[in-house]
Length: 231
Length: 102
Image (cartoon, each protein chain N blue to C red):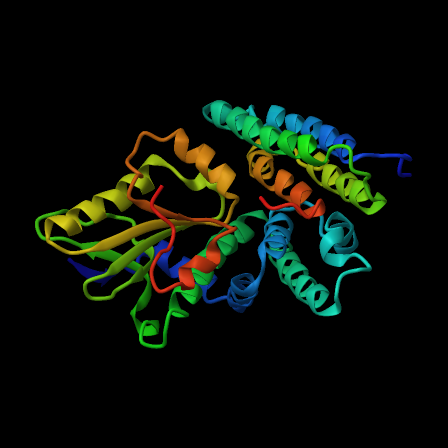
């Protein structure tokens, strides 16, 4: 098993520009340190139709109400501001930015496992196996650690979970095992676990050994190894 | 204007009706018909459980206003794909407004 940069085709070049947008890094940093209510705020605003901050503050009284402590409120204000910036980009661009944000927060949290791991967390990589045709689509985030590699695919919403990605992840795990290698595979979905389970329950593609990290459990990515059991 | 003597059950009943409206819009995507209805059922069940636990508790006016805003937000949606996104997001907003876990 070995890792390789994805081909620099037109899509990759355009998407690299999106990934490099400073707004992506700012949003990812806030989300990495946010609690669940602030993440729900971020998701709602970045998914939203309206860009009036006062309306969003009224929609989240437990974050912006008069009884909220100032430090918590400041964090929520920062989340609201960055999410509104994303929402302001227009539908097509913000869709790409949202995807890039989930990838960025995933890489950021994986890198927090320890300074030695940082350089081993990579983006847009393919995983190659002897005698197996390479997948066209690269993995969003990989941890290229000898003896315990990981490959993660990132989705903005539960609806992004589909047969293609489940097959790709599980095939990689099986091919790694065929080479006596360990490859942890998983999905990071910036959506509620309830919705992800509904989506997964409709799939016939293999997912029993695929880890699932959701909006509620993002912080687990920073743990030394995935702490949730595969579904 | 917030009606007097509201209970959490009143808010949840209203939220489930609004969620059904989102599902009706999301159903326009034929391939997602079952997913849309499974999502509606899962979240209605979650909210219904909450009504069973806290339904008789009094409701703060700010929480009712929060639901007003959330319903206004989803009322602005005309794209069925966006409606499917909000089938998941809307109940999370309701739960956060009620300081409830997912």
